[in-house]
Length: 193
Image 1 (cartoon, one colour):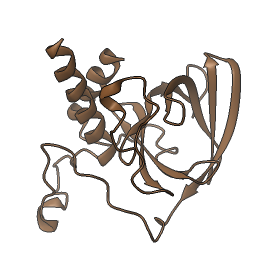
Image 2: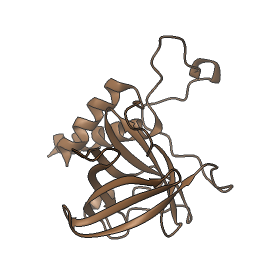
Image 3: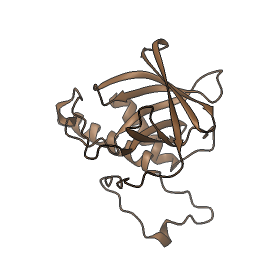
């Protein structure tokens, strides 16, 4: 897991955001039971997803087996982890998903059922004992949506500076920044051991 996040951090910083390759799953998605929106973005060819809205505010990762993470906020937390394109299956991505309701990791893949429906298949083992959920594309944030917590070490540039200049790469997305931040935290924790 540490290697997964460390690789993601390096790749996310190198790309500076979303890639054009099959970005159809990129966007905000309302999960099946309606308790959260997940923002999916492409960070150097891998799809990552973070919680960008939750029905109950102030949620924490209480079920995480890592005691240091039990009190981290679920808002902004990565849950879709490093999904890569599936060989011979265009538009389908495979990787892992973290379930904060039970603190467990599962094998996962995502693909579009149609323009506004994402199929998320979670499996106990890769391609074994799987369950598919349908997520709905979100085009407008909920009226009660709170802003994401700030990512450590980043500042929001003024609006004039945030506009992309011709020939200059756009800054990394919130998703890619949070993946990088998570990787840095894991590296710091492992260095202390």
